Length: 149
Picture 1 (cartoon, rainbow, N blue to C red):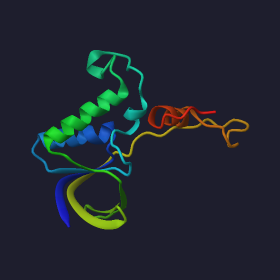
Picture 2: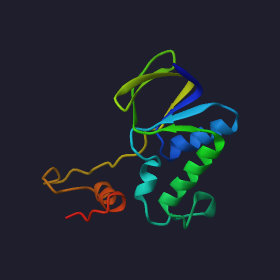
Picture 3: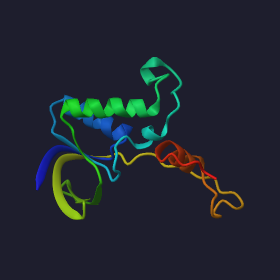
Picture 4: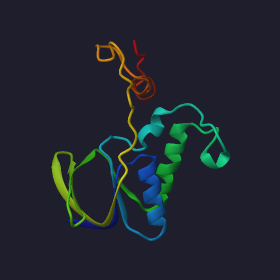
């Protein structure tokens, strides 16, 4: 069983930011994400952000994701992808399915940062085949290069 000061579940912006801060304070940190690529929703966002410079205005979402990954790597954060956390126990132990193998990890602390998801507004016909939400369309176009329709 591997042991870390901090286990983070989710390699999106919140999970990576928490991991970077913890590693910067000398903690050993591992991040698990079930996806094949980290960054969460940021990699779907090809538009430039709005707001102030300190809030990443005029920077595209996927660029922010790339910056977070570099910062995490530079801080010594271990990011384990294709890894689904299948259990969490009272002694801060987690079980993780990685490539069909169950592994055990223990941490002093655990942060659950499993990210955002689209909140569909039901309307007549919303469950019919081919009807998708904005998030699904964004995923198809920006991640997979497929035009919906």
